[in-house]
Image 1 (cartoon, rainbow, N blue to C red):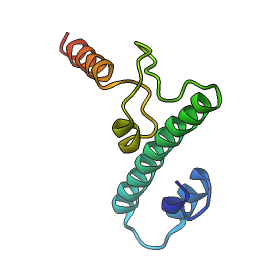
Image 2: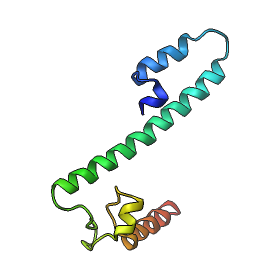
Image 3: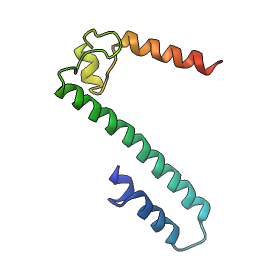
Length: 102
């Protein structure tokens, strides 16, 4: 997260962008949106990893949160933060897709 913001807070970064010389406000706005979007994505990823570490500490890591079955090792190797088995993940995604079309 700090890679995009050079180690400063979001507010400090926004202030720095606004204080830049030149009249390229549209470009700065676009860059700021990209930086903030990347920060948001990284925050979601870090939260998912924190949740996986919490499940590990509680002895629940590798168990599907919906059905309780073991999540295959190959899935955990590819996506260590996975909290659902493939079947439950697909079911949730189908539910979201169905709900979005209503």
